[in-house]
Length: 182
Image (cartoon, rainbow, N blue to C red; front, side):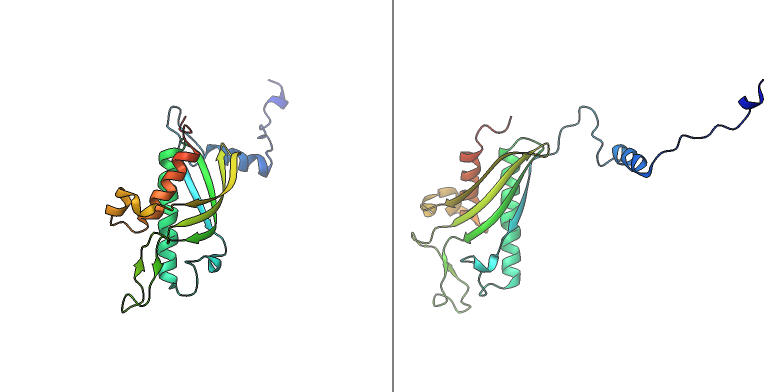
């Protein structure tokens, strides 16, 4: 045997970037087993300049504002899962917000009673981007209004917070993304 064949073999040199790329590709977070269903559609909601919202003024406590924004974020996520194909992401920026009803400080001792009237419908101005496989496949800016919100029997019977906003957002998803499931 020739002496050069007895020399120890050197491992190939790999750059740090090559190693990091290999680790990232083999990590469980990025690995999708063959035949596994894609993750459900999701919504990412941002509330831009809430101090300018009709219902985002300083009369709100920080807890009320947080709970309202979390509730609205959950509504968008729920409707995205129902109306959009798996793996789709909708990014929503809330530009303006006016919840159903108005706070009537004279109607209650605490000043926190929200009174629903025909002329106090919910409205929401939003900007959205629809992404599939990281590519933007749709975008727009719209104002949602539910002027007949008191006529919605399902929302009227519900005891859920934000029930009128939920109905308005669900209607928007159905109208805007009908047939998007496939």
